[in-house]
Length: 320
Image (cartoon, rainbow, N blue to C red; front, side, top):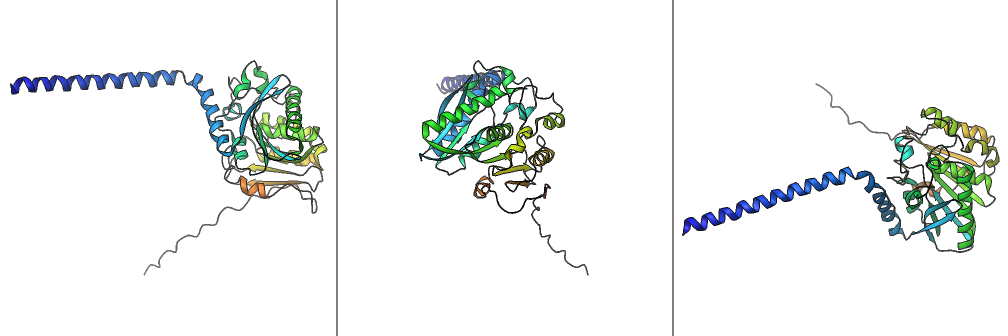
């Protein structure tokens, strides 16, 4: 009797082990299938990232019809007849990987949206680039490639800002652009009469030099922000550049500042430890407190990196 009961228990245990092993095999197969479909899953994961960033700070998603494009936006508008701060996203995966054959420019790390979530202003909006997020449908690849700053793209942002202005009774705009969004913000500031200030973070302010330094073809069909620089001498603006940035070098900003010419409205900050898409979000509340302004004497065009933290070395005991 004991023998048969032990055999029954043994058979039951073997069955459990076999079922457990089968579950492991099925789980590994599922993971393999998910890995194989990673390209199809990524766009949805990127949308989820944007939702998780925006919703806790009460930024509501909507789609803005803008000419030939539909621009994904998140907004938090609390005060009518007041200015709004508009954040414009970077180039996304195209900049990160420098792959001109990218099939989806939606960023994995939407830096500009991160910055917007740190902004406590009453009226804040973030606008994606054409072809990012849900706007990728029926969007030609040229608009996230060589024509990413084309007249059509800039016209779409002008339409979007006009729509926001009318919808929320906005008096003017403070523009903030990261990466290629800095190029868009700069050109918009030159084209519009309602831009109160301009900020760029690792901004693409000279597309010709940008293409040359990163060994890619010139951005044919795109407008170049540096061509608009002389028109911006009287616009309060601050530009931020990272000392560890491998995509946007200080030379791009330097060339832009030279093109602006003498101005007491242009400031810049060189952040030694910042990389292209890292090191900005934590510092952004501090930077927001230092508003762009026009005052004081004209500053010379030169870069003075912020001093690195001083580390006190422990004393070495005297040898006897």
